[in-house]
Amino acid sequence: MGHGNLIAWMRDLALPYWAEQGRDAGTGLFQERLLPDGTPDHAATRRVRVQARQIYVYAHASVLGWYPDGAGLALRAYDRLAEIAHAPDGRGGFIHSFGPDGRVESPLRDAYDHAFLVLAFAWLLRATGEPRVRAALEAVLGFVDAEMTAADGSLLEGVPASLPRRQNPQMHWYEAMLALMELGFPGAAERAARHRALFETRLYDPGTRSLGEYFTDDWAPAPGLAGAILEPGHHAEWVWLLRRHEALAGLPRSPIAGALLETALRWADPATGLLVDEALRDGGTHRGTRRTWLQTELAKAWLSEVELGGLGAAERAQAALAALDRYYLRQPIEAGWVDQLDQEARALPGPIPASTLYHIFVAVSEAARVL
Image (tube, rainbow, N blue to C red):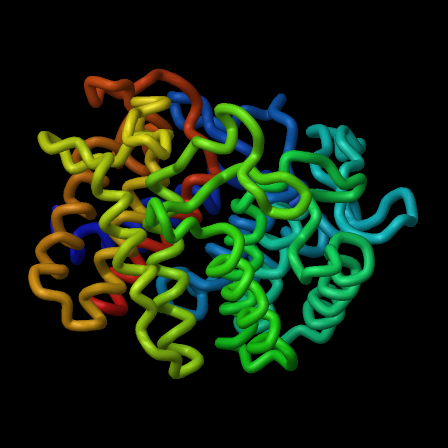
C-alpha cells in the first residue's frame, strides 16, 4: 500500500489495537510483546526502554491528532512507570527491567534506556504540559550528567559502566537532544552539537565511510571481530538524524550523511531492497537476517533526502515503505508485524515485539510530514 494507506493503517488499526491489547488496563503499563495470536504475553519481563518507546509513540500520536487519547494513556503509563522503576533503591535514575508483578529484575541504569526516557518525556511534556513530566525530564538529564557521562561528554554504557562502548546509546541520546531542541528546551542545542561532534570525530571512520558499533573506552574500534562489525540500519538512522539536526539548527549539509547512505546501500538486497542485519567493514555480510527496524530507517533516510530535493529520493522512499509493508506489516495479525526475516526473506516465527512500534510509527509519521 502507498504511504497514505500506511498512515490510515497506523491511525485506524495499529494505534488503537496496541492501546488496547498492547496495554495492561489494570496498571496502565504497556505490554512487552504480543503472542502470534495477538494476545499479550503476560509473563514477559517489562523493559523500561519499551515503556518509554510506547509513551513516546502515544504522546506524539496525540500531538499529530492521530490518536487523541494517546496523551492520557501515555501519562498514565508514565505515572505507573515512575512508581515502579524510578530509583526504587534510592540511587537515582531508572532501573532496566521489572517483572509482571512490578518487582525489580535488573537494577542496572542503562544509557540506552535513559535516552528513550528523555525522548518520551520530551514528547509527553509537549502533549500534556504537565509540570511533573518536566520535573522528571530534568531529573533524568541531571542523573545522566552526574552518573553516566564521561569526561568527553559521551554516555557511559550504564551504572555500573561496562565495555565495549557502543555507538547505539550515543545515537539515541542525540535523537533525544533533537527532540529537546524541537521543544525549545534549555541547553538542548549545545548537547546535540556535542554528540554530533562525537559522531564525526570518533564513531564515523572517514577512511571506510562507515560507522562502527563497538569501541574501547577511548573510542578506538573494539579489538577483534567486534571492531569490524557494522549495522547498515544504523548508517541509515544517522542519515536521518544528521539531516534533522541540520534543519533544526540551520547547519550546512554534511557530506558524511550522503556517504553513510551509500555505505548502507552496499548491503541492500537487489531483489527486495531490504538491508541485512550486520555487515563487516571489509564488505562481507556478518548476519544475513533482516529485522524490521532496518527497513524503517532506510525509509527515513530517503525521506530526509526528499526534503533536500534529492533526485529520485521520493521514489526510493516510497519503495522502502512498500517493502516494509509487503514483507513485515499486517502479519501474523492485521495490527502487527514480523520482527525478522531469514536470508531468503521468509518471516521467522516468534512473538510481536512492542518495541518495533516506535520504528514503524516514526517512519510513517515522517512519510506523512514529508510526502
